[in-house]
Length: 218
Ligand code: DX5
Ligand code: ZN
Image (cartoon, rainbow, N blue to C red):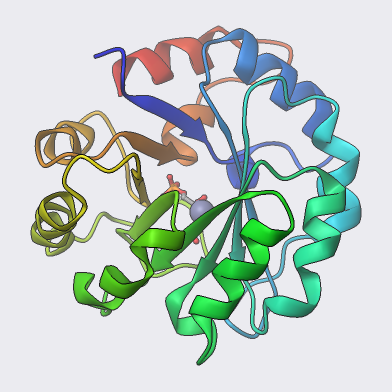
């Protein structure tokens, strides 16, 4: 399926080697690079901010897909634009003014994504779709790699596919994607699959071939 994009999450890469990890996983067939920004407040984990995202930008030859798990979002939009994000995704749960946030992301020249936690219904994005380039459905509770896929989200993706129709809006799935769960998501209309642990397991920058095999297995 040529339209399906695999977006490895560098959350599961070697944090001391991001540049080389991105080079390796792109050479092995990654379509996008997914970058998880966590603030220890919106989610119970911390990763990194705009300076690191800017530093890795030159290694990303595909699409830099930045997933913000932070609140508030608006004070950081310019910094992520300056860091070179192609897609900037904010959570609908991150504040009362997600519509304004998406306007600001597009105003800063990026593609705008909106992410939904597992407990948030598809309906939450209906009145955002005219400002949205990507809807990210979380199939784990955000914060950590390597968690199990939450099957109740399949129906949500089906509803989103119907709501979006043929508008050019990506449906991205994030969390617990493996060769076993990926087909379930393709079937209901997802076109971007984020995968962290399932891509990076078994390989390294010195032995990147497993990354390619893992990507092809999804
Ligand atoms: C979770 C992150 C995901 C994570 C996915 O909060 O948003 O992008 O890296 O990791 P896996 O694929 O291991 O579930
Ligand atoms: Zn993510």
